[in-house]
Image (cartoon, rainbow, N blue to C red; front, top):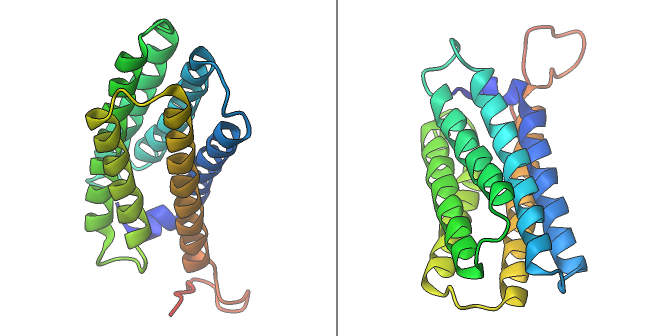
Length: 193
């Protein structure tokens, strides 16, 4: 995936970020959610996030040899979201491990994408940092599964909020990278210093 490809699809990255911020704000606004409500909220977030990542990958078929990275990340998110809705009665422990696995898989794919883009765009570290945060959340949940519902809700909310903000920043930086300097210089792209 090239920087130009990502710049053309900057809005998909921003939408993923907005979905993360909305999920994070909801988790903080209603910390007393029942665990079943959290299951549905998380399932919806994973489906939306996975959908945006899958669309990003599918739009790049034939244009990039790395389109499959985003597609796999998206399919993993969609699969976790569907499983969450199909089995809403999962025990708290099972859901925590499911969320931990999703966060780790997502983080690995985001770091891989950032490494691939490091020579092509500035500030690719936003994507790498969101990947590291994903892996840290997954590890925290995997090693502390007995954490209470309240702690899990706030941890997921904080993660989604930070992850969302980082993706929004990255998306708008990519948008600015792709914008022409002015209407008289057709074909040129703005590259921030």
